[in-house]
Amino acid sequence: MAINLMKVNDMSVDENVFCNLQNLRLLQLNHVKLGGGCEYLLRKLTWLCWHGFPLSYIPDGLYGENLVAIDMRYSNLRQVKNSKNLKNLSLCGCKGSTSTTLASRLRSWFLPQSPIPTNLLPPSFHGLDRLATLSLRDCNLSDDALPRDLGSLRSLTNLELNRNSFRSLPASLSNLLRLTSLKLDDNERIETIPDLPRNLDILQASNCTSLERLPDISLASRLRLLYIANCPKLIEAPGLDKSKSISHIDMEGCYDISNTLKNSIHKGCFTGMVLPGNEIPALFNYKTEGATILFKLPEFNGRILNGINVCIVCSSHLEKEETKQIRINLTNHTTGFTKSFRAVAINLVKSCEDHLWQGHLSNKVFKLGSEDEVELIVDCRDTMTVKKTGVYLVFEQDEARLNSKRSLDTDDVAGSSCDNPLQTKRMRFETSQQNIEENMDVA
Image (cartoon, rainbow, N blue to C red):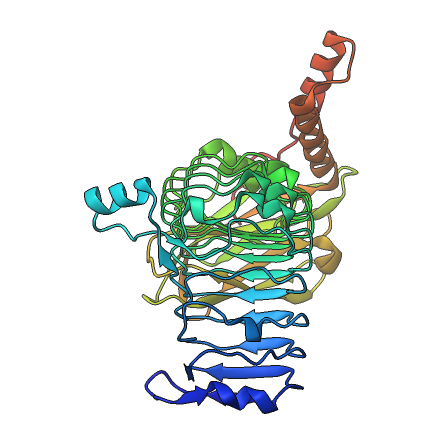
């Protein structure tokens, strides 16, 4: 049964309509009013979708034992209760009831411009062992509104907490061993994020304007996508330079991160990365003005070229948020081989300020050889201006040394297992040497 109306419509459903629908499994009544309660228990109901639900609570009649999905976005709910078979719960835009704690009252007295936090969730997540998706975007939730036993949701894979009033999150977050996606965008008050679950795949925390420190990224050993754009107070991102799994990083607008961290991650082989900056890093072997660069590779002397890192200084043409496309065309003039690298999507949000984009091209595709003459063109169509271009050569031996150093640094954090201090110092010295080519003139 489905009725989907716009908010401007004024239609109500009498509670008696449910008495003849005892076999109903799917119910969608978006922006429909309910005339009275719901005394008739819909035992077979498995999916309940009611955007703009008018009541402050979900009647017991809609809480059948087979209910697995509740989607009550932008409703007047004041509180929800647990349902043991629930797998998907979406309460996005539900503002809930006003918190009555002393801290909340003081906040409203002295900071009247601040949103009043809400108590939408039950005091505990106990019993929600099957819950896989929890969407709480734009619910005006504060620290005390999220149950401390968040980590007990052992089946949770997707957690959306965007656009709330958190300053911190429960430490039990790291216990969510099946969590793969965590969305924290637009939490303007959050200052720190606790340790991440080790199987996390995606972390989104853009526009968190008070965020100062990330947790140890290397502990999330399967993290691939890290989106933390427009976090101007962010200073620390421990473990980011040691991560072996991340493929995409967006740190556009993160102006306070250290040059040491920048230089470290510039050596990494990321598919796509955005950082603040208006100069090609010094470690890049070849640099030029504009979007076209010509260079001659050095003698390899037995080394194996794994690929090249391409870095550009670019600025957006567009004032609105829009995905930009980057295409890289490479021609090997020595062999006559020409190849266009697949389009890479990035976001340079609104700002027309200069930023760095960097991507890695594997040599398995281009098969560049010793002393080859190469031409590389970066094509951004008409969405961005490419002001400078740089190329950094990534040799297999150098990458192995870098990975070895990363592993050693990780071991140092946990405590060295080497019994001989002199040997430990020697290992640190040997593995920290980087064989980087001298900057070469652009042809």
